[in-house]
Image 1 (cartoon, rainbow, N blue to C red):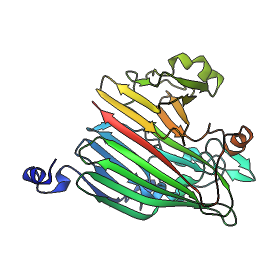
Image 2: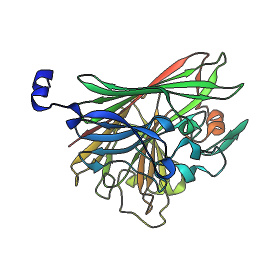
Image 3: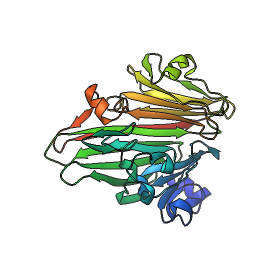
Image 4: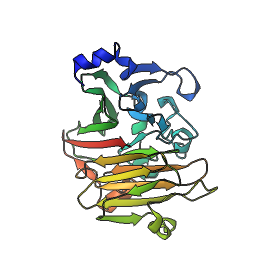
Length: 325
């Protein structure tokens, strides 16, 4: 909308869109800052600079889209890179970034790597939030480093069209050392009720390779794109999808009349992991663009799926989430 027309209807931007910084003051996330983003196209969400500049809650037209775990929001102080701790702090949220050294199960590769890596335990710096006439932006830099070893910089920029219903994540990961370094990257996008329900279905490109992770998943591969109501004690299923040329997946809920479409940079994120968990109380669908099969750092290297950055080299990824009715 032209500026002149817009301000004929609205005297203050915050009537329909905006971004503001908020400090939480209770619970396990006490003291954590977040950016609350609202668009005129119906998006409401939280960007969390204190946990890797990830995304927490997200609503579209008042409907909850994301999954939140029993833990809820957390702070970096709750992140401990010790065996068995992941499920004590994992918040869920719309985006939980995994990496940068390892993604997938706990493993030891010269040193211990916790489940899904250490990225989420880092706070962003060089933060900025602003808008122009077309978009809202949030950006920052997350460092992951170790004395005498790796030194990664991840620069992230979010773009939210003011009158749209989508978000674009653009990341640039740089190896800031004079040695080549391996990395792993996983964008853990988590969908929950009511967007996820027994009425929902998935739609993939026709040409793709599907690899179930477990025997139980293999038995149910024909129902990969269908969902049930919550089931007590149900076992989770994971499927690895490798699209041939088109990188998209759509989650449709006809009862709500909402479609969520996920697209990503296929050349840098060739695999989409699908986490299907119909277990009561942990009811979630993860759609996860990834650089690897997320089997852990050591196994991925043995099977030839590790990505490498040369000295001072960078790689750029993008992930776009778009909603329609």
